[in-house]
Image 1 (tube, rainbow, N blue to C red):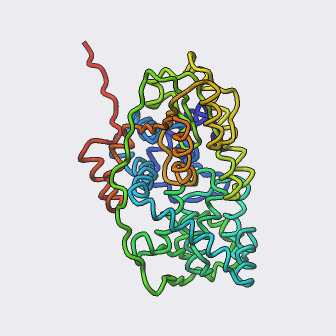
Image 2: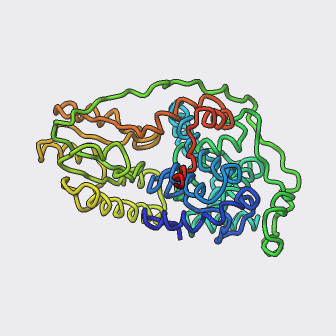
Image 3: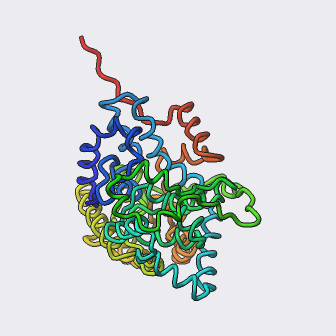
Length: 415
């Protein structure tokens, strides 16, 4: 089961610590529906039931930084992708436009093949197994995701945008940055010309032999896969948003705290410093519907949102915490502010994605009624975001040089 509460996520992290020392050696081995070698904490991290820092720091209490370097890197890939996309939000906008255009122009033969692939009836048995796991659990091992995406793009020759959208609909941990940019990387578009190909020899190396023997149908298609690249590779996207606009809330004003599903840890955030009148947790249900989220995914989100409300009630005892998650709309926030005579709304800044796309209208809507909306950033987000100007390993080197990675807590000296 994938943890959907902070308590369960912290327990899973604690249980994973003994495994973390062997992560570098074992992480690429795939055991569908089991996954003993990875933490499966990515959904909790994506929605910040726990943070990247907490996840990376916990094993340091037992093991050396050098032992854990690969695990820490994998945790920070998510932060890197979010930072990279924040600097270039047009990449997300272009992707969403492409998905809609491709969906509206599919020829019947391609549509039929997509339906077979997405139902787990492609004829390549091992990929169909991975598909069924995704549909039934909302999870797929990262190595299996790479194989699956490489097969979808370079063997099936299907549009990468629709594969990314399928993952976004079903993966519990899918966020706009990690999901979209990982698919672009496999397609050879993120690092232009560098693709990821699913070779049979690689599957044989990292899957149990008995499993692969059982699901061997169609494996010959992965003997010598060839990259499927567009005739003309795109130019490297430019940084178009170097600086995030900052706003400065007035602590003396009657305030509404707005918690959304991009960050479900208000009690360990800059919001905790404000003596707010009211707090509301919202669910972006319109996006769930528009994007076609699976029931498994929306149910997981509902559990996580309910857990956030319960934690907020304990963490903000002087604040009226609304007792249920409300469907997000601009009119909801306006209504709450006007009903309770609140003149400012504070929230943790949403990352680039569907909710972020809606913010300009929300700001204008509230401003008409003289209600200000302020975005607060976690200090670590502000520190790391400007560093994602190039590739991940350059980003990683900057984290090391600037000492921005979690450190083992110093032990008190013995007297």
